[in-house]
Image (cartoon, rainbow, N blue to C red):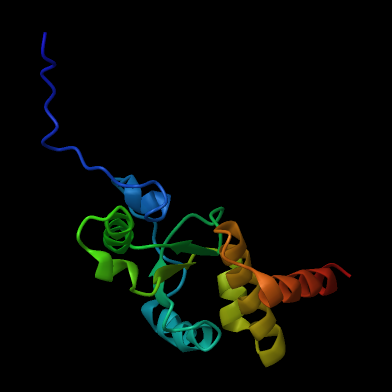
Length: 158
């Protein structure tokens, strides 16, 4: 007996393709604690600390309890690279460099702290720490960067 399943409104997405609040649409969006002006002020500060060829900066209004920085890979890019790896006639896609979204949680207290920090070296360390934590969560922090993260973490807890 054939199954009669109606999948017209069904969408398939990898669970790590975006932040969970974007994958599961909610009725009420969280308001951002940072104004557009504050986000515009913060954007170049963070962009100076990350490789622009590898990351696009995205500001999202997420829960305060979510991570301050989250790294995702755009679904389209991931699918093209996966199809290329499987020999789907798109071998040129596998040669494209990896590109990720670095999602900044505008409601996390650390992001507000970074924005308001006047000591440039402390601000840089905070940015590096939260971005390294995001990289570590995706198994993307390796080698010298991982060693520096560990040293910085030890200094913070002293």
